[in-house]
Length: 253
Image 1 (cartoon, rainbow, N blue to C red):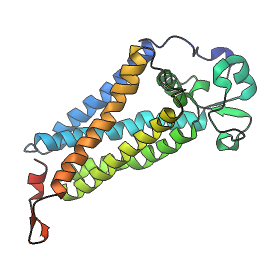
Image 2 (tube, rainbow, N blue to C red):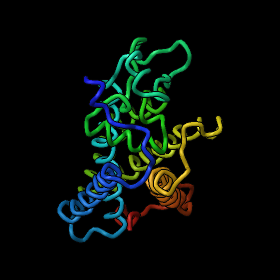
Image 3 (spheres, one colour):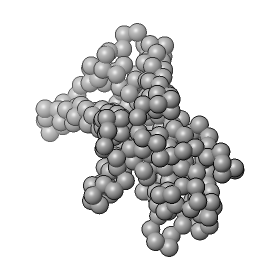
Image 4 (spheres, rainbow, N blue to C red):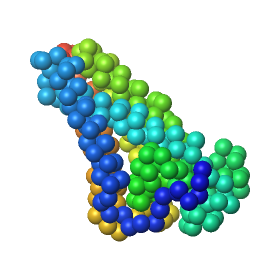
């Protein structure tokens, strides 16, 4: 890789070609999920069922495309520490504990900061809001491995169950997914809250309200809503010591 071809990382976090492209990609995934709901779901499906389907398909697409590209940059994009020292400035510090190297590679640094691909540029853009996503933070990478290889496929499976009107099974997996999304979000931000948020940038509208709040709020509000609906479904009025029986179709209306 030519050092001279590396992109500039220290420009101000404002709306630019890369940020607009990133937001357009997210919007395109949402539109894809919306259109798919009309193509794949049965016409009599209720608004709530359709909303569940759209959310889980959008969730799966984000995990299996955008977040999968993050893992690709972490595992397959690197630069020797010597080159980084002269070309990256503040990004020459490893995002691992002292005396710990990512993948045992003590001579290189890994992550989107050190690449020039489109995936690397997209994550460099998001790293303006949270610097950890530009490197090889161990917590972020560990959570993304679970997100991409477990939560993404499970979300697709939930869509399959909703399409086939297997609502009882869908409830169980939607609760698993919602719980996992909330736990993952907490584990991403909790280390920052406990350490004074050294990697977060809340200095402008783009990084604070778009990247850190708007995009993350979706993975808090929808899982909470699903868990609330599940709680209402599972805490039916007791009848002779057993849960009152309700039809699976009605439970999702």
